[in-house]
Image 1: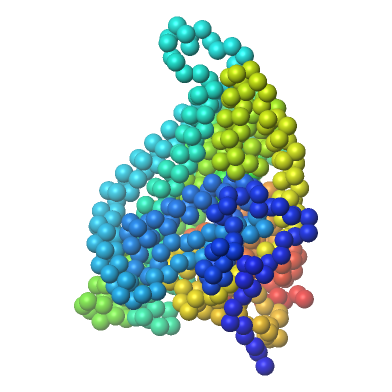
Image 2: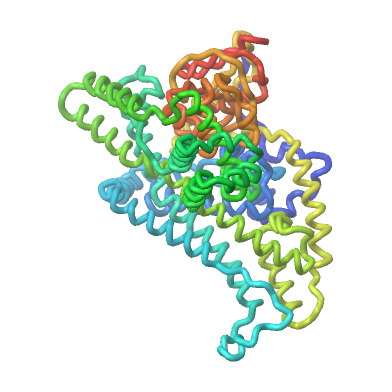
Length: 609
């Protein structure tokens, strides 16, 4: 008989990997599961945030998740008052981020919050375009302010201008002030990040729920497709690669991109007038479109195109090869828009004229209005802003390395930002008084210890979920982004695997269509060149900088994500089948294995054992 569990292992039941003892010292006290909060923590439902933070957290890198911890929570809980959902709580366990949605359990409180939500959210929905234009101005100003922060050296003797201009401030003061500015700028950007995002998901979720009630048999992808086909800023970097590829072909320099990237190709391009013309265009595109992370942007080592020009040049080369063969490289936007409108018109016609049909059209219109922000904010925040941020922090690391605190600049990321603040003060006081900084002897061995611990934690397989599952899950992010629903949790609680499912991997129906082909399993953008035309991509997640690969593949299968995850959205835009949120696709499916992907049912069939 197929048995079921009622709960998952609690946080206190998870053991520390043998050689990672002491990992807790890398994180602030409030980030840890603890005995004094055990009653609360054990009754919550925690899941690992593998969507944004699939790796162990470097101590400094917690600034990204700590920023969204506050930003998301305050908008749900204190500003817009989302009726059934408060924020998302966070903890770190063995270096991995676990999160839990906090629901409003009192029906009367839900009703009270609903009145406030309709008034406050309604103001944003009614003025969305105007407010979004203001948001872009705020985001750009925040990035420019970060770019303008200067990180000074600590000179042996201050320049005479400090005296003759009566500045009254030293380089030591300025480096401390600059660190505060950089950290506060990250907090500020994440305040803006969630000004609109919760509302965007709430609007889509409301449309989704209306469709499910009005059309009980409607597939999830049909709902999502009605909101597809909207050209958004996040596609601009890839569009620039396609344009540069076409220019290279037109100028007759595309073959030069076959040289080693980036240095070999750039050197060859510099030898001809046509090549130099192409390079001038290439240089003009870099800011801001190459401030595009190769990963999620949440880790300092997720470097961007601007840091590694081989990545965009590889994409340009791939597009140029297709163009030289006479193939198309643009997204099939017109076809998608036609299909989108046909689906919407078809469902609208099923409703009687009057209130129901008007409500359908109004909710669809709102979902389409908010959709650009849902995608575009990622470019401003996780890509452009974070690229500048990580490189600014590296500048502090370089100063501290020259002072003997670290062996190399990137060692700074093994300290939490509160520790960096103390270490900077230690460095500045020693510089100011001519004494000896303790950090020179304290931090190098501590960084070495933490490197070893994080290496161990990289090898550990974190349990995907912990604790007591709720009866219902309604928090918009949890449902739309992570793909965690009440039904999904019930499936996870099943203890015995159905033998009939042994030859299948199941997930969410992310994008419709059925294809068969050979699998290609990759885990990072650095492996993109391994993907062959016509293969089926198997990966943990996709990120926007993976865009060039979508022109080569037949379908996508991901471990993580829901109906509004990046992989699902982009596959709908490219007309590719997708099954997302399988949980274990990369563990069950190997490169070279023949599989059938059914994006309509969310089932991947393993044709080869």
